[in-house]
Image (cartoon, rainbow, N blue to C red; front, side, top):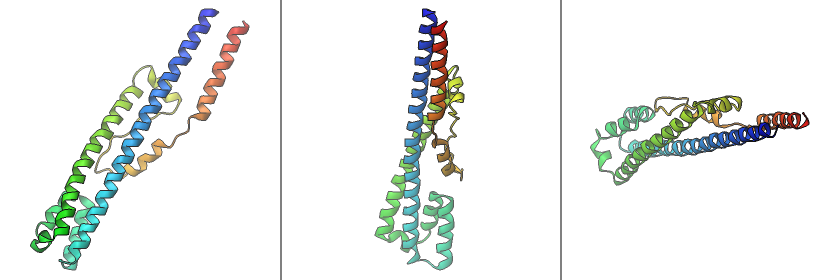
Length: 184
């Protein structure tokens, strides 16, 4: 009976370790997700400012083309804007384009960091026997960031989780099992 209790305690400690590692990895992913979202929002703001500056130099249809390019791809926006010499000569435009290029590199680094965190989490989450705990506690796999994926913002729902009810159930059933072992 003593050895059974020791084995049960070891199993509970292992479960706690697995849960804490899953939870820590999920927090790292949340942080990376938040950083990536902030970069993407900043990029959208900068490209919007570039279009505002362009409005003073270009005709309505050309500004419309820049807006379409902005919604598709920052490099496309920059390439289209390069076709207009007056705009390229504007100091504010040049400053914003420099910031945008720096931001693009930052977003790329954030994306790589986020995807690396997702890879580490998914690898651990899907390894045996951790996958058994992950499934019981509803730790699903996390999708990688894809710049063409319009549903990336919906990913935040994967991070809204509360394990307290499941943990209380597991602790309660474990306590009953220990009590049953001790009374035998």
